[in-house]
Length: 277
Image (cartoon, rainbow, N blue to C red; front, side, top):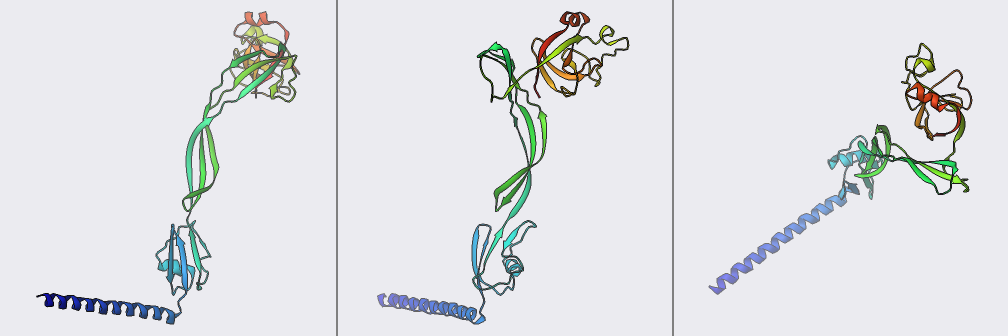
């Protein structure tokens, strides 16, 4: 019985040797055939992989086609697709993509500092607390092999405007040279109300620009203050230049009040006017 088992083991060992010899022979025949054909050896780098092979393809285009590599319109190859295949050639496929990305982000509030030369240095008063706005941007994003390489803004829309923090600071006795401070215009001011006693019997409650005449609307010479400018006037508050007047020339300004009595009380005086825009 023992002799029988030994014979079987010896027979199996001989069969394995014969199989190995056939396999080695086949591999040798394949290698010999490749060398006889003289096929070039090339390397293809694509989609994060490296492929080394022998090929009968004539061009890079044919080579990639034989590997089933499909190119999108923006994809690039190095060398070009019409480059002839030669031994040792390395072909790199770069996947290029362009997409649009929509993002919403904060529009930061800014701080505007108004210099008051009549108040002592160190005096600070916050006139208005600013709030951030909201902006929607559409970006064009370029990627190579899945990695972002550049982006640029295609369009931008302000969904909510930011408002400024407005601070009044005293500058008396302290130099302000070099600072980003808004200095006031000294102007001669009068006041009016939207009714006929201030604006004549044809008054319709509208300004020269069509805006509603109300507290916070002022008339200016737009050669001095551009129409639409936002202003701050101590003692009056925030205002917008949205009216004109035949008598409002040069450094003159006319402040709108709700009632004729308030306008009369104001009278005529020199005031400081700060441009916020």
